[in-house]
Figure 1 (cartoon, rainbow over the protein chains, first blue to last red):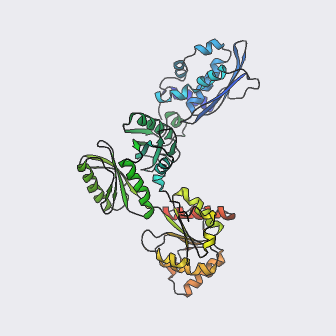
Figure 2 (cartoon, rainbow over the protein chains, first blue to last red; figure 1 turned 120 degrees about the vertical axis):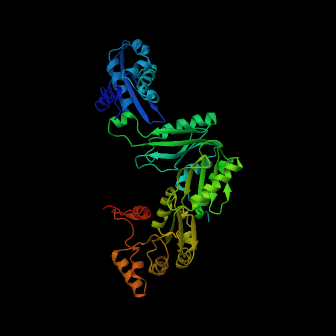
Figure 3 (tube, chains in turn purple, green; figure 1 turned 180 degrees about the horizontal axis):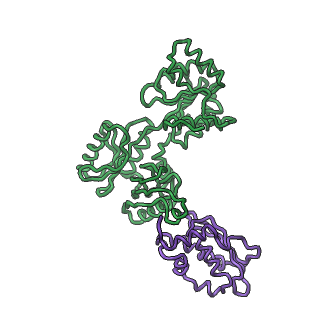
Length: 124
Length: 357
């Protein structure tokens, strides 16, 4: 087994994902996929007064994509939309730990991309 | 009557690309596999220039996404690539859910109608007739693909006469080897991927019944040829049997007797449930080299048939080959499920596997 630093955190969040749930009061919702690898993820957010008061996700995805979504929801709960806007992909990948293979960056950044698409849409 | 062609499983992706109307594509071929069991050398995945893809390089499709990305690169560049892919990423391995091993894939740009494509076309046609053939693909420059028949005739070229002649000599040597020769070979300093094309399997189905219709339909994706025999022209012509490769209105036992000799003798599946047909067909089938002779019916019917054959003097060892009741015991009900049980038994027979209860 590889001992790359990111793996322990990825496995932990894949086995016990945080905020993996539907939001009854979601104001924004979007579903996105990495079509070739088969990852599919739905992000939901409740935004009040420019703040993400709640955030959750549902996924049929690999461990990296799921763990990244899990970490992202932990980090962004209570964040402002401006803070979401400022969050960079490198930061999201780095949050998983060192050693995420370059070809898997698309997995690691899927949740952020889907969340941004959700927030860009009209509240519903 | 229309006669759909069976498709060799190894060439199905190519045929699908060609029949899709695409003018060019990238052909991915598994040329090396290390570890694990869900990999078959020579498996193809074909990606059309418009993005559609056909086939799969591994049984579970776990490497397909990355193979398709490589195919799109090759479609853009025109330059072939050989890539090595682990079948599992580190995260899957860390979870204990990874597939073992890695595969090497050759990814080539193919234009419909060019020499390489014509070699593939000929291969797809030739396997239906049971022709022993080797498909040789050059791994480096000069690029090219050649189909070599046992008589030495060639289709395709590397556009280098010396290399083509060397490929023919390699094929000649490989034809003399026993066992599978599919894999990477080096000859005169040129690396080749050689695919030994096994003939399409043929199943002779006796009796145009609803089970026969299901067998014909289910055999198409398996890449097997269904040859349907029945004395009744009008019944054989019904659309429900359109998936049969051949429909032969005949005295079934005569046709069975004509085709029962040699290594390519078909399997015989008797689903007529009609003693007028069964006894003569079984006589002919058991006298030949068929790898599988089965008859639909109860244990009692099977026992009666065996007793009648024994009374006629048919050798006991030949009678012992008769499978009746036919099919694996999976609790099948209805024509389609019975067809599934028969096909499962055929797979086990061809693979030399004793099914587990």
